[in-house]
Length: 283
Image (cartoon, rainbow, N blue to C red; front, side, top):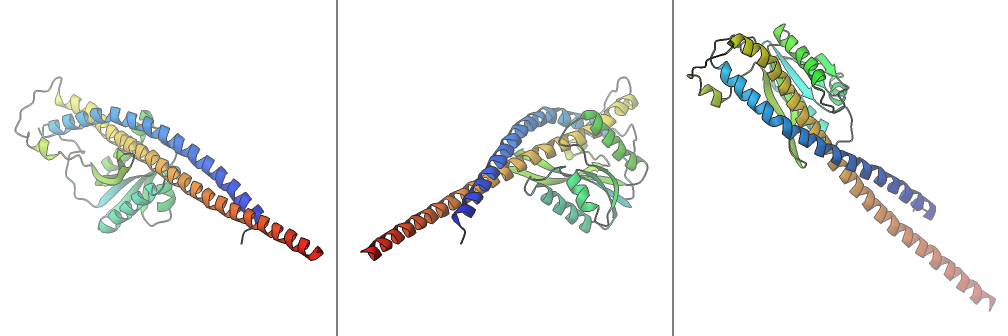
């Protein structure tokens, strides 16, 4: 059984832990709010840009490698994880879905890892790693994301991979976020766009100039919005993990406090018993 001194030491340790986890919870909550606002601002732009480009691509007047159908010999998989831990099952869920996809595909797979946790896991596996980025730190710097996107599209255009999938965590609410696997390259039009295939468009100044401007911006925006979703989900997961840790610390403090009170009561009762026994012996 623990002594009174050991119980008091554990209570102090649990109180310090609770203070740390509560602070981290508050910081994560603040970051979630900021990241969510940034995500809501970016979503309409990304949606309209995707809708515009994919509808225009149905004209078939401007062939581009992003639209062409290839014989798939190598598949690229972009995996978005976090650079830091203490975010619950966030990284585990992504890695499990990535493993499931990699085991199910019968085509040679190559990885692009965005996040230190994903790199730490897959560098010990047999999958080929084309590129890794481990210092984003949850920051959405457009120029940096543009450089990453250019590197990824460079692999596709050079023929290192014949298709590219993107695996990240979509954010729905502070309590709802899940891993999502989407096709990144080649660019495929949704059903709504295919219905407009018969429409005729007039391009000014020209279709070539329009696509040369839109395509790089489209693929960069797709990576940008995916990272925004992932970073928001990461902070939400960290907030919930720290809340759970804080609640557990409080429960531990309550149990230890009860144990301390019982130990003190037992010690007082023992002292009273000894005093009474000694008094009776002196009679």
